[in-house]
Image (cartoon, rainbow, N blue to C red; front, side):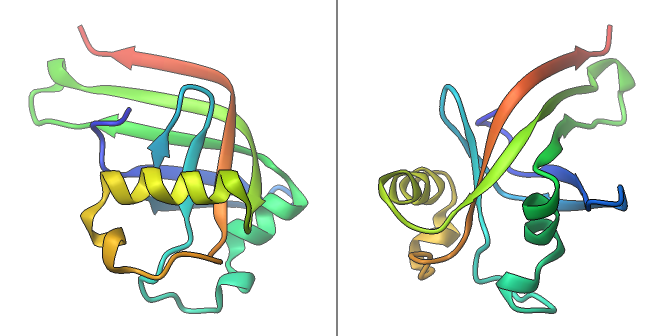
Length: 130
């Protein structure tokens, strides 16, 4: 998954209303992290639906796919798991280091204190055409 640059996070609120958003992510052996970064948002970070969904219903999916016009080369990784939001601490700091290592753009952003979504996989499905 580390060679992929973007995934799609699927969450649902307490009533089951879904949301899918693209996100940048970095992985460790046991966890996947994404930060609510400084890219423009329509609302304050605390009001983002993805964070409200996680607070109400921490179950989610993350899809990381590879698409080409040659459909014999299609593949994806689907992660099903649960999430929690980190706001500080050693794990938060380590997640930011991982994300900055992967994404040069994050090196210039002030991410300390920004919410980090931690995904703990429960099930991982790999699929590849052919």
